[in-house]
Every structure is written in structure tokens, then in C-alpha cells.
Length: 599
Ligand code: SF4
Image (cartoon, rainbow, N blue to C red; front, side, top):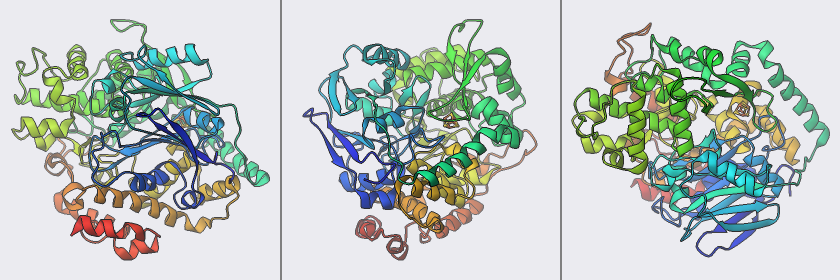
């Protein structure tokens, strides 16, 4: 097998309890690399078109890539599945900090779980030994307790992907956590895992990963490690990111009117400093921490020191914290930190949870949802105790919680009364913490992103290409600041695997993986002109506050930008990849299915 890859995939059938390994297909690995790219192709091949994404047949793929575990910032795992949240797109969230490398040390490039167990179980992988174990004692427990219990039972070096009660209870936007504060959340990953009665996948590996060309690799390693570790001295972003992690960008995005404020009604918030990273650093911070082999160490650990939530350990970051914070006008920092920790521990996708809560608050403000509808909860903006009560209802799918547990698209379709205008999602996936009235590239990426309202897709053609490479190699997306020119990704891949890919083909590889994903979505029912769209708010609710008051994204301008995007990605005016482009990329095998889906 080539260097970088462990060389085999582990398959787990939860119906029979059987496990098996198969060698990774080397030709496929050369074309689609790993993680997000390879997962899209494997899902295309393995899941019949139109299958219900929550059916037992729907596989859950935990995939690494050739650079996971061997390079700095190479700590990620990508979870690939057909999204139960959107029903028509891929899901491909990524997360660190250690699980992916540990899986490769155990000898696997991925774990693919299919079927449904008739009782709660977890998978335990210890190098070549794989067992399905009873998880009755873990069911119902939060992420922190589950993770700690598995460590106590299996040893302190074990790494676990697990779900919390939100997933067990069927909340559509529940997540999979790699440890108490790191999640691969978007698109209903946890919902799918919960529907399989799979509580956790725990792994311990003691092996090593082969590097094909040692000297070349060492030189590249030194180059990028030097840039990463020196970044705090050489750039403002490097300094800020090393000191404060992604949480620092909340204030920066508010300053340029791009932050989700009050359910995306505004992009700038005068009270942002009350929940800023500077307040966190002063009041709560304990230390920074990094993923496997990362010199940046962006994770921010802190503790709530006083008040009703005192004693809770917290770990704020940007999108999930600000969708709950500025998105819901929470000015109580300790309350916000508690909410974020609570959402994590219950196993929610905190980005979607913040979006749903902001949507419900706006419905309450407008009288679309009344106190009666909310079983007595006074859901005023920023009121933390009411948010906690609402989340309990969502968790248990009780009363209004049953509706809100489905997400803003489904909720707005049922409550109506014009709420669709401010139901902030694309293809059923709630937005990340950026709003698009001013920064149109952000809005466009929500519309055309291949997993729905995706904050991770990339604002420019170049950024999209870099991100799909990093999600397929399984390097952290933040590494891109240090990977200039982007052909460095190919140089690293060649040194690790022993391949001789042409760095000049960087964009062709990216294009193949991105068009593969778009093709998959079209096969599964996505109609680009109907689904690559934005909610009315972005087009017609101009900002009323801040330096960009008056900004919005006119629909005609958006349609033109979307058409430009289609053409740049080799699609026709309807957003469908052309046969010529598919053939050029070696994707001609998708042509019949695309033809059937679009005629
Ligand atoms: S930058 Fe942050 S998320 Fe990325 S690898 Fe480092 S610690 Fe992990």
C-alpha cells in the first residue's frame, strides 16, 4: 500500500453484528484522496438512489485521509453520510482532535457502519480486534459522562466518537462528538447514529503510518511547521488565532457587519463587547489546547467562576457560540458559555440549535408563536433561563419542542404567517454565524454549498478548492493560511504516499471532488434553481444598524452571481454539470443518473 494510508477500511454491520475489512481501492484513492472526496464517491456507489437517509441501509462513514496523523494540523476525521437534515445532500462534517489519527494507528483508514442494532451498542476497536459491546449503561448519558465512562472502562488513551441524548431522542440536528467539546455536527450526523442505536465508536491504536519519501517529507514538514508555530509572530491573524481561537472573530465580523445578530436581521451589534473573547479571557479562560500535533492550539478552555452556572467547564468557538450568542442577543457571558456547554453535552448541533432558538424568538416577538404555544415560556431575546427551558422541550420533543426539533425549515412551513422569510436555512440546513446582506460571497456559499447552509464551503472558487482538499486529506481547514501556494498540499501528498501527482493539477482534483458532490445531490433530488436559494430576508431586510446600514443582497444580483458560479464550476445555466465537464473530470459514470434526474 502507498504511504499515508493505513490500507484498509473496517465495515461494521449492526444487524448481524459482523465486521470485516477490505483493502482501500487504490485507484479510487488516487482520484478522490480520502475523507470528503472519497466519501462522496463511496456513497454514490453504495447507497441506492432515493434511499431514505435515516433508513438502516444508510451508511455512516467515519473517514480519515492520507495526511491524518502524519502532519501538523492533520488531526481531522470527516463523517460522510446522506443528510437526514436536508434529505437531498451529502453530509460531511469534520472534527479533531485525536480520533482520526488514533484510527489510523489502529490500522484503518475508515469505519463504515450500516444497519441498525436492536439494542444500544458501541463499537470498540483495539488495533486488529473489533467488538460490538452493550451500551445500555451509556444510553441517556451526556457527552462528557459517556466519554469519561468509556475512558474509565477502556483506558485513558482511548478516543471516542459518541452521541448524546439529543440524538437518542431523534432531534434532527443532533451531532456526533469526538470529545466533550469537539463535534462533527452538521447535517444530522448524530440523528443517523442514534437511529442505528449506536452510542459510540471507541478506538485505541498502537501502530504507525508509513511515509514513502522520508527526506522530502521532513523538509516539507519543517517548512509548514515553522510557518504554523511562527504564525503568531508574523501575522495579525496568526497571533489572534493562537491566542483566542476562532472565538476572536465574533467582534471582527460584527465590526464589518457580517455577524448573525438577532436571527440574521442585522450584521453589527453594539453590545458585542459584552460577550467578546476579551471578556472571556479576563473572566473565564484557563488554557488553550490543540489537536493532535497542532502548534496553533486554538481550543479555548475556561470555567464559569461565579453565579448560577459556576463550576461548569466551557470551550467557546466562533460559529456555535455566536449562533446562540449574538444570534439570540445574549449579553450574559456566563449564561452564554453555559448554554454552549449544555448544547454540546446534550449532543446538539449548536449552530442549528442557535438558529432554531433565534427563529423561535423572532416568532414570539412577532406574535406568531405565543406564550401559550410555548407552554408558558417567555421567549424574549437574550433571556437565558427561557432558552434553557425551550431546549429541554426540544430535547424531549415535548410540545413546541417536537416541532422545533426538526429545524427552522420544517417549523416555518408549519407555523406559516410569513415566518418563511426569516427561516434562515439553505436546503433545510441552518446557517452558520455569518449573515449575507453585506458580504454577498458568504450568502452565495450558503446557497450553493454542497451540504446545505454550509459555513465551511468556501467563499471563492479558490477557497472552495482548498477546503475540499483539506477535508479529503484530513488536515484542519485553518491550515490553509500556511499552505501557500496551495500546491503544497499536493507536494505533501506525494511525499507521504510516494505518488507523483502534478501539483499543477491541484484545481482539477478539487473540481472532480466538488462536482462529484454536486452530482450526488442532483441524483438525490436537488433541483439547483429551486434549492440553491436564499431566504427572503437576505434580499429584502436591509440592515438598520452599524456601518453598513442599508445593505442587502438584491435578488437579481444574487441570481447573476449564482449563474457565474455555475459556469465557473462547469455547469449549465440550470446549475447542472455539463456532460463535457463530467467527461473531462473522469466522472462520465454519473451522466446517466444526472440525465434521469434532470429530464
Ligand atoms: S487550529 Fe485548532 S482546530 Fe485546527 S488542528 Fe489546530 S487546535 Fe485543532
